Structures are given as C-alpha cells and as structure tokens.
Length: 300
Length: 324
Image (cartoon, rainbow over all chains, first blue to last red; front, side, top):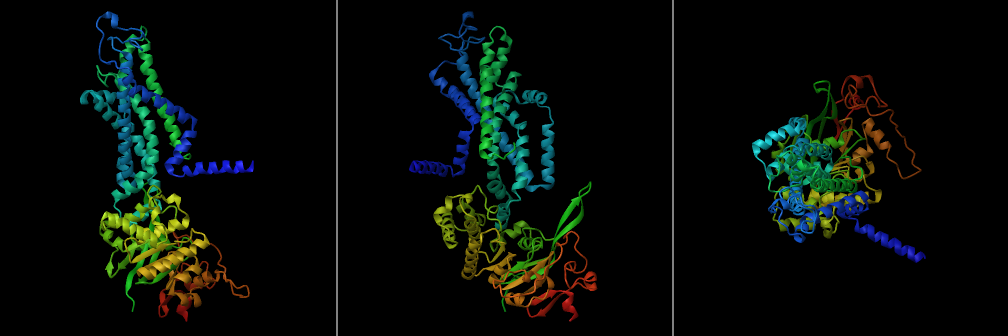
C-alpha cells in the first residue's frame, strides 16, 4: 500500500517536472480550464469545418443552378444545407465564407495588436511629450463613432478584403496601445531594463528585446479575444454592404443577403449566424482561459 | 602612487517632486548632495550607510544611469558628466554594474546564455562563434555549467542568478564594477560564496570595485577604503583598518557599535541613535546628522561642517574635529 502511494507520488512529481517550462505550465493550466477547453473544441470544430469540409464536399460555392427550381431548395442530398436565392450551394458558401471571415479575423487582430503594441511601447518607454501626444491621439481615435466614418472610408477605399482589414486595424489598435503602455510603464522600472542600459543597449534594443517579449503573454490573450471581435466587425461591415463583395462569400455578407428572405427561408440567416456565434464564443472562451492560464492575477 | 580610475566631485542628484496644477517642481529629494570621492585602479571602495542614505543613487549616478543634477564625474582624467547617452555607449564597456535583486535584474523571457552574451552583441565584439565561446568561458569562470545557457532565469537559485549577473557584467572585460548590494538578498552561506568569487575575480582580472553595502563585517573583509554616507553626504572616508579602528565621526562610531562582536566577554559601549533619519526633502540645517548626534553643539545648527583631512587619507566632516 505504502509503496503504491510512493509510486503514485513519484508519478505526480514527474508530471509536475514536465510542466516546469513556461509553455508547459501554461498548457497544463489551460487543459484544466473547462471553459477554455469548450472554446478550444468549438474552434477546432469550426477550423475543421472550414478547411477540411471543402475536401469532402466539393461543390463550387459560386455555381448557380439554372432555372427557378434551383432557388431556395431545402436541405437535400444534392445540397446538404439547401441552396440560396441564386441557387448556390449553401454548405459550400459556408466553407468559403468561413475562410474569408477567419482570414480577416486573424490578420486584422494580429495587425491591430502589433500597431497597438508599437504605439504603447514608444509612448510608455519614452514617456514625456511623446507619451502625451500618442495617448491623446489614442483617446481621440477611441472617441470617433466608428460606423459613420466606416461608411465614408469604404466609399473612399473601395470594397474588398484588404480594405476591411485596414479599416478594422485603424479602429482596433487603441485598446492594445493602452494595455501595452501601462505594462511598459511598470516593466521599464525593472532592474533588468536598467541593466540593459548599463550595458549600453539602445532604446530600440531595450524596447524589442526586453520590453516587448514581456508583454507578449498579454498580447497573445488580447489577440485571441480580438479575433472574435474582428470577425463580428467584418460581419457588421459586410452586413452594411461595404465588406466582401458578391459573388465571394463571407459569413457577414451571407447574413446580409439572407435578411430579405428572413420569413421565407430563415435557415439562410441561421447557418452563418450560428457559425459567427460559435466562432466568436469559442475565441472568447479560449482567450479567457488563456488569460487565466498565463497569469491568474492578470486583469484585462 | 596608485592611479585614480574615477573621481567624483561635489556630485549632486536631486529628484524633483512635481505638484500643483501645472506640475511645477515644488521641492526636491536631495538623494545625493555634494558627494566627493575617488577610486584608485584595482582597489575596492566601499560605500556604507543606512537605508535611504543615497548609496545606490550615488553608484548609479556615477555610471550615468541617472543624469547628475550637479558636480563632476571624471573617468580616467576625462570629464564624462555631460556626455550624451550615445557618447557614453563606448565607455559602458569599461564600467559595469551588478544589482542587488537577483530576481528583478535578469529578463525572465531571455535564456541565460543570451543575457550574458548581450553586452558582446551591443558592442559588436567578435564573431558569433567567438561570442558563444566567450559566454561559455565566462559561465565557467563564475561557476555555472555552460550547458545551462539555454535555461531561463527562473530555473536558477538566487545565488546562481547573482553569478549570472556577475558574468553579464564581466563578459566585456570592464575596468570598473559597481556592486550594488550584491549579497543583501542572499542566504548567509551563499553570501560568502559570492564574496569569495568577487574577490577572486578582482585579483585575476584586475578589477576596480565600488562596493555598496550595509553589512559592515563584509565591508571590512572586502574593502581597501570605506566611505560612510548619511543623508546624501559622505561624512567620513578612510582606509579600511583606520576607519574600523579609529572612527572619528559620531555617526561612524554609532554605526560601528552596532556590529555584533562574536565574543560574549567583550563589553563595549553601545551608541544607540535616537529617532529616524530626517527627510532628504528637507534636511536639517548645518550638519545633517545633528538631530541624532549625541554631541550636537550650537554651531552644528548654523554651519555645515567642512570635510577635513585628519590623517593622511582619512577625512571626516564634523565640527568636533575642527575645534581641536
């Protein structure tokens, strides 16, 4: 009995020594976070759906079935999720729309985090008047009502995937800038930063080699949650008609397209709506768990 | 006569206190106020004093990690007081600092090998291979296994981290090393290891130390000369034995009487100071120490005592000495 207990204890210790590295420790805590795991499974499901789905169901999302008989078909063997108002396969459009939505979500969340990090680093590290100017600019950006300006911007920039990403980044970097600035203000008082200055390291080196890596944990969490936000944003822009343009699908413009038929074919609104809902919820759950795993004391 | 490596004249570092609607400077914390000392090549000067006396600020200002408010810093006969950070960069090769806190002074997101290599990278010394080699050699010199270079600081103990700090400071062959309470955060058994390492390295590499500490037993063991600080001023400077055997300033005497003696038979007079250290924002007039000095006289309130040389190499600032 006693030997077994010792054996079990040894096993426990072995487990904990595996978790000794930082990444291992975070991963271990993450797997214990129930909500994060729910989020992770939702995201894995969505990713499989979007990337593996088209390999199994090889329908063209833009092919229209000729004749009135092809429109608004309910689910059938030929079209598992039916067809839409142009007679296009909804399942295939869900796959390719999802790819575009996720692509926009990832790229714009990562870019806006990087822009925010850059602004926050410079403002926090240099302080003084550069801090003042950058932070007042951030405040000004935050106070701009987004949607009216968005419509104006869309008419100037034109419509398309990269334009949407640009718009989301332009209006999305401010919270990260504030976050990073706050972190840098406390990090730059650390002795290792002073040690770097004593070595003769340049401001650039201190910012990118010493300060930035120490904000990375927080930025990863913020990006994860930001992806969900960016997907909603893309959907809103596309819903207003300024986003991804037909015939290309995105979950947002599928919603927009479907609103005219909400009473006749509610399923056309339910599928993309549900997909957006699941993706955003998944990213939020996962991001929440990641935050708890990286630093339980962190306030974000 | 030994050559002077670094000399500090009337060094001042005041930290402004901002207040009011327009953020005007309403007062200053006089952390370092008119401090002068010199360090000869190859010797150890210790800076002692209680918490808040300005020891650390003096060390950092001397290295220009803080811009001095006044005074002069002369390094190898060259005035470096007003050099810009860019002009300072080449000089930083020659002067390094080791910090008190073994936890805060190493970047937690950098492998130890990179931390030690960084000074070489910053000053573009050698090829990549040579740098790696230098790091491995340095790690061995300070008693760390070179295989550990890929590990992160949190995987080391406090003593090992201080060794990493030493390695980082010494990898570019500096002449002057400021040791900012390098052992205060360590266990006693580890303290002696680090002290021995520092002494050994000093002899081997011909280093000059400014040793900032408050443990007087260690100071006596380590130093060639000792300077005693109180409230931003140096009150007494002397050779090691001279200071410990014949302290002249009342503050030094009080400080030394607080050192425990390992012989229970020895009876000696304990000087117990009353009250707290006054605020450096608004230090007492005249002699800074007069509020707690057992021998305070009327003149102490009116005049600041001058630094006088009592014996060769032994200076102190006290009115008691002027009277004699």
